[in-house]
Amino acid sequence: MNLLYSTLAALAVLGLFVVLIWRQNRDLLRARAYRDFFLRLIPPLSTAVFVVGLPLVLRLATVENYGAVLLAYLAGAALLTAIISRSVAPEERRAVSAFRKGEYEKAAAIYEDLISRRPLARHYSALAACMDAAGNPHAALEAAERAIKQDPRLGIAYYNRASALAALGERRRARSDLEMVFRTDSNRRLRRAAEEALRSLEKV
Image (cartoon, rainbow, N blue to C red; front, side, top):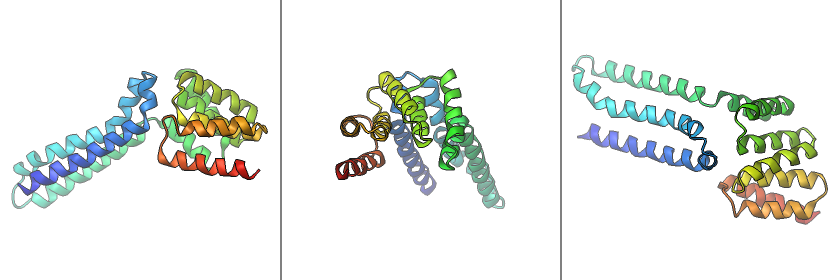
């Protein structure tokens, strides 16, 4: 019975992860990129399969090998889940890694390649961030506008366009875009960043 409760608790936690993934990737559903969305659900879903199968595996174990079976099962589940997680959207992971290292042109090149194959609004928005960070606000503005045209509810695209507009001296339009962040699909971190950017514009 204790194992059943533990399994249900683990599944509840995994359910929360699924909800979080859904909240972070609603733009894919709006773009009808169902394959990309489903791929992001594979890690928690695969973990759920392992969790559900755990009671059955332990019933087959004997008293002598119970601990070893449990350890081997959990280690295998963790390893497989980690491998699956790293295989999801590998190009985006490489682009994000390059951006965080300050390799903005490399990140931009990856996003441009992604756009050539899957022209999603999130990729245009990310390309805008790369171009802006690389000191090319005109290209950033163009990419951000493409993102907004494809998905008018993508909050990060308005934030990235606001950054490009601010760099070009168009502070009034930048302020308007930052205000749009609060009326579109955006998370808490993005809204906090928009608040800070608005305060910075007011100081100028």
